[in-house]
Length: 637
Image (spheres, rainbow, N blue to C red):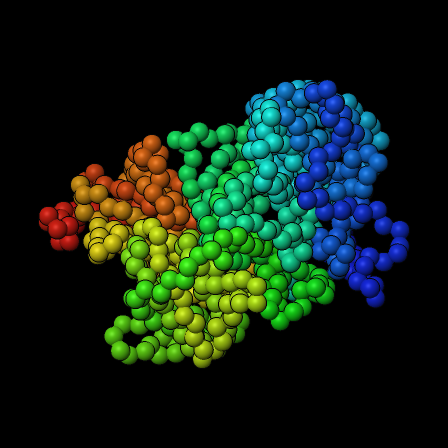
């Protein structure tokens, strides 16, 4: 039986004069914000009846695209995406009935205590099954169903929306969960290829059943304790990035269990990668007012091409937010932070600032190749030519606690914006045009020939990134990215530090993984080290659409290195332990490792793309015998 259709027939574009859903017979699958738990909880027992149904999903709310999907529903209620929230205190007896109203066999998983044991509940068409168990294992869990055959955990097919969150709280935990929100990521992908689409087929990504700019707007006050539980119920990798703040990673989970970290195992991050079918809980406290965003850092999960047949939202058409709402799609959430103590704070004079000038340049390419871009830091009194190129962009060195002013001057032919990734700064300078700032005072795009002044006082030393936040796919792959290194006060760059930047090459379409670059080249220059001396290798992931696997090899054997920092923040000492030199790094992540070559000779840093065609770049790493200063190399061969 033909169960999936091409985009042309699967997608129904529905409009009415009022903008509401048309008055035709549609069984809806409504967005679920996961604030209300399903079922009836009485006497430490939850009773809930779930159904699997065919329904129509409106990922843009009441506007635009409609997709026939399979979805969960609570009996007596509309279907929802994600499925009904199951949320109970630990020790609750669960009495769940599941009725399969689909015309195909379904296998349901996750309706059990998540103690590491796998389960499956097989339902024939029309069949009802009852499940009884006690939910004891505290954590962020989820349940899901499959109706299509595949070897992957989650699905991209007709059953891709069959998932719901299952949260087990500690007993008497209401105070701890006062600001606790649950976000479930799902995705949809068309079965038919379409050469007219940038990614080769129709795709759509959603958080709690809605795709940007229709996702929920979040609002907090300075000093709030914010706790999020994020469930990746899609068959995709998502590096989830929070602008402006670090969050503490409290737990990480799989479809089978959840690992709650104690204080020694927790770490702070600005980007955390969720593999398919994994979860995380995080906590953060906003200490600066303004507007921020939380989003997936893979450009193909937030690109405007994902809107397919979307119609504009009438409430989003004001000039102040037009660019912001139209510049992205998919996995994006907007955050506003209010400063409740602002009127009580005295005005302080702006301190003296170190001043830098950063130029955006562009060089046209012959079609179908895309333009090339560059960030070039002014050296001396002469401005770079408007078509000057360097890849990656200039490395910017700042100092911790030193007030710095960076004037970004756009010599390119297209507007741009610059995001200072991982930096704790004022919202207005964060780099999201039309949103960064507050109220009517939001940052503009930097128009061709124009400039924008950014003020930063870095509170910590570490490895960060700066990159474009406008027309992201074209400009990021085109070259608008660079390393931002914050040094301790009154220090110079360490001569034994090394920088490794992982990125993508420009490509006219994204039907496959673009070529991989390391330090701006597919055949990068050797990295020179000193045998017997410790080096800090600062690794930056800023590719557009894929993560990278890294291995540092001595011949074919992994050497040892020691992770020392993540996303610009030092790891707890208990986590700075020597281990085999293998890691995975997604875009928007930085990782610092310490490596001491045990002997002179040749090593290899192997970098492999994770998504699509496996592309491998091998970087020669040459350890020589060095003088005390560590700069004079005699390479052993």
